[in-house]
Image 1: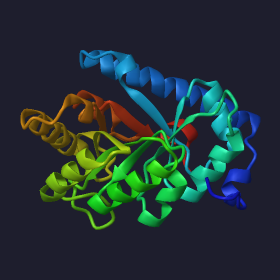
Image 2: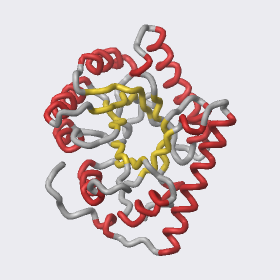
Image 3: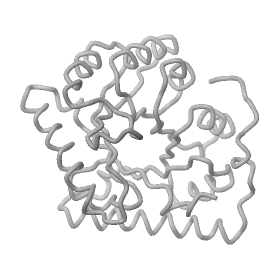
Image 4: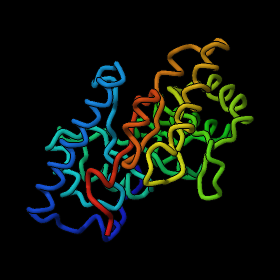
Length: 251
């Protein structure tokens, strides 16, 4: 990890008793919704990983979510994730950290030593750098390949025609464990607008399987956020990334 630096001001904000109660109730509500959506889709609730997106949230807020049952936390910014991980250290309550934001190659050295899963790998060069850095830590870094199916200028991710190159790089890397695919749908208040993107990601995973890619590389589909995670589960998501529904709107 990098040397500790001053935390973002948001991380220092104390969590009121009312806010703590809200976060705990919110997390349990979302977990129950995940369970119901999985069962409705003929799947097991335990097969869905709920990642509580904690970017800009304080350590007190994160601890409240953990006490309510959260195990997996998602962060968008490298420095913030590193500092929060350092704050927890090796204590028993330390969560599993997921990196879900855009990752630059020069930040791989801070992530590869401890991150449970990097969702947002979108280039062969990034795979190669994560491979190199993970090797320096004598560990294997789990990753997902991010595709930009929405083709929005504000979104990151590889284009579909670039996927073959990423797959080859991921399979060749000795210190990277490619575990599946990730995408983001355009934001909308109507969850159904996300369905075509999630269905497409599932179809791409199935095509890779039919082409002979081993199942161990296709075990996860990371898709679905606060506004549409139930639709994502219907379409095959194994990981959903939920922030606002757990922690409330960001200030």
